[in-house]
Image (tube, rainbow, N blue to C red; front, side, top):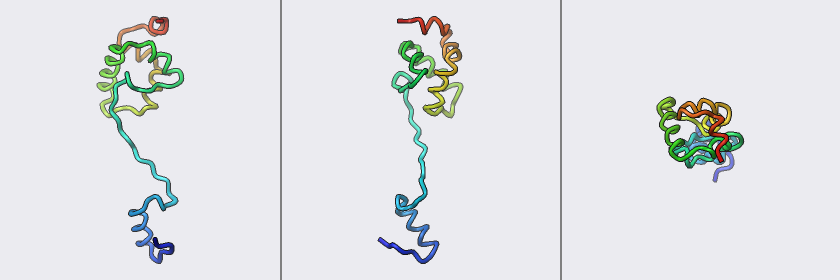
Length: 103
């Protein structure tokens, strides 16, 4: 492998062929489709999600797909369940207190 490059074009060509050699750190956006039943909630969002039935999670999934046609990130989904739990419960016409009181 070439250690010394004489021209900027060669550096660019090398980076295109071997991006791992570059000092620049790149991220790639990965989009996944999954239902909320298989979503791995964390922190406070997990408390609500664990109390919801499979059917309720499917209803919420359908509502969120309608409201956010371009999708949501994992963090956005988790934050909705954690910080906007009343909104999530409204999507299925349920009261948040009733859901959290479930065994």
